[in-house]
Image 1 (cartoon, one colour):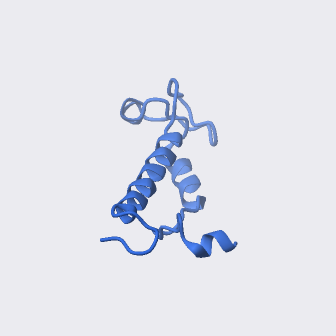
Image 2 (cartoon, one colour):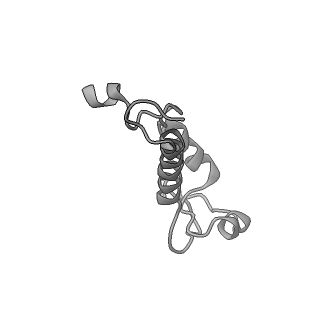
Image 3 (cartoon, helix red, strand yellow):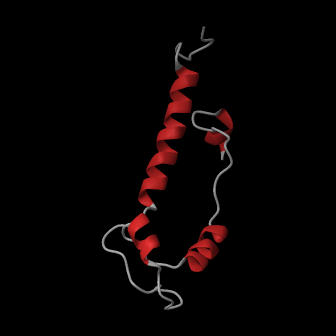
Length: 88
């Protein structure tokens, strides 16, 4: 049961939208094209098993780990449609 102006499925719609956004972000970060034989950061060879497992890989595991560690991710709080998000 919804209250106020929200429809019956409003909460589930927000959850679905948040998941869809996260999937789109993850897909956009996936490598594309052919894999490199050597890391574009440190020029170390990329193992064949890694190149087969991740088509389009461009970095060795160490360099990729450093990049991913530096990336920031939003916390799992859904603010879509929140009154607070409209005030900022």
